[in-house]
Amino acid sequence: MAGTTERTALEERQELQSERLRDTVAHAYENVRFYRDRLDETGVSPEDIQSVDDLERLPFTTKEDFRDEYPDGLFAVDADELLRIHASSGTTGKPKIVGYTERDLELWDEVMARSMEAAGIEPGDTVQNAYGYGLFTGGLGFHGGAEELGTTVIPTGSGNTQRQVELARDLESDVLACTPSYALYFAETAHEMGVDPRELPVSTVLYGAEPCTEPMRAELEDRLGAAGIENYGLSELIGPGVAVECREAQDGMHIWEEHFYPEVIDPQTDETLPEGEEGELVLTSLSKEALPVLRYRTGDLTSLTYGECACGRTTARMDSVTGRADDLLIVRGVNLYPSQIEDVVLEFDAVAPHYRIDLSREDELDRLALTVELAEGFDGDRERLREAVLERLENALSVRPDSLDVVEYGTLERTEVGKVKRVYDHR
Ligand SMILES: [Zn+2]
Image 1 (cartoon, rainbow, N blue to C red):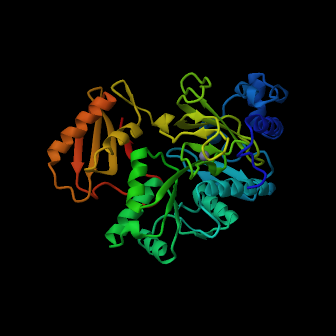
Image 2 (cartoon, rainbow, N blue to C red):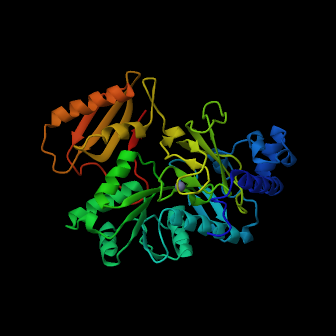
Image 3 (cartoon, helix red, strand yellow):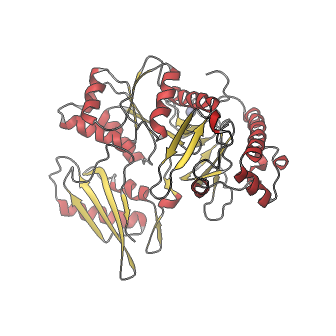
């Protein structure tokens, strides 16, 4: 695609990034009281930020800042310049409101079209978009990119899964765009309808919006007989369209970093971490008008890789998000992420890719209860399987769940709409 720096040398891109960063900081300082106050308090003036190397001097922006400035305190343009509003729902409190000018929407279409192109999707393909339409950025984000690229979009949104299976078959959808948990639900529903999901024409599942481990990806690829390509984004920066895996190498997600500048920090000390080390992803928007964002703490845990990819692109790449910094479960003093449990549980072929974690406190002690589901048609020794999973968890994670329930296939709740919930912390 023209006008991008996907394949240019690092130095050349950095010059463009630095130029855009100077403009973004000036724009935010002049037009957003929040940033003006924050920079003044920190003693940093916009002139101090000359290049991306100066970025560390800027304070972070957090999701609490979005909440405190609800609804539009972070907007840098007047309301009449906005063409669209979206909102990202939190589990608690007020939603984060995000706004777009005409140019922001064009940028969004562009980065989404680039993401789909990198994922191996071509003009003329049929894209079934099962991300939710509405305030959530998933639906309209994928929709705009798919049209920009020149594909045929079927805007199913989420839900109505039986009809979705029929449409995928009858309209020959090449691509299913959805969350990984929905892809599994879709496959299960097809199977229940007597349709072999592997026989459906879907050859690419473009998934995102939830953490997905490699065993989970393997499951959905196997069940749908399709390639699973991961993408990443978040409403606070633009929506989906921040990063995507390339079809050729699938070796980390290419970040469209002339628009979204990435850093990884230690979430405890706030220090910037070197290439390859895992920490919290921090993003700075470089081209946004309505909602410039400086050093936004995404809460997502990942690491960055630099250097040319086998596909020829030279952008920074981010690893799959292994979890969220605030998903960290401290169980009897041991740090544990739900994704680590998922990794272990899905090693077992006899276990279906559905599980539930319940945390409670009894007599001042943390209690970890895990529920896993048997694979369809399992007829082995259930107690033996239970013991094997417990032992493997203890060896791999140094934590033995206080209870492990092994339930029949189909028992645990499936997610037809929205993001899947697997962790219940009752403490
Ligand atoms: Zn690549």
